[in-house]
Amino acid sequence: MSGKGELCTSACKSNPCQCGDKCQCGEGCTCSACKSCHCTNDGCNCGKECTGPTSCKCDTSCSCK
Image (cartoon, rainbow, N blue to C red; front, side, top):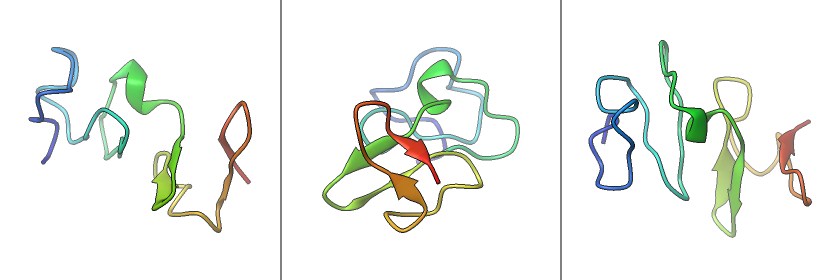
């Protein structure tokens, strides 16, 4: 999707990221929605360091291990 999805904010449009429930950040992504980890039943993505459910700690403040 590369930051072109309908859920992306204007700040995300020109950056390599995907916003919404399945937010993924790439190099240069400055979208604030992409700065936090979004956990789902399918796993989560949170920047380069968080690659899936095994690297993500899902709680009230979903964060990368």
